[in-house]
Image (cartoon, rainbow, N blue to C red):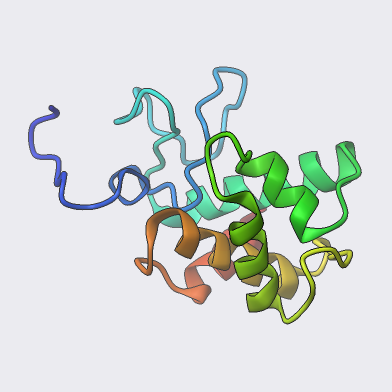
Length: 141
């Protein structure tokens, strides 16, 4: 156990990583803290940097690079069903966006991307963060 760490909070909150973005040595994220407080997931100096990383991962990698268009496709890639209830996760996020999980979503809209990563943070760590913090992360992306 790390000294001074509040283990009563979810790991993503302890690491300022609202979406639980996994660690990857090749990702030199802005705001990344090394060493991470968690072996599996990145640690950021502020949650807005964690939202920024999630926004870039979803928009630039999953949507632009891999061509994933729907909330369901994006969530199944981000939170695979062997670890998560991905269909429930996708339905929750899509519901927060006011669309079907199988409808295309435009992550180049800052408003849509902010709402999506905020909803994902609720699924990942609970209601610890605000939509405004997600919006700040997207503005930095």
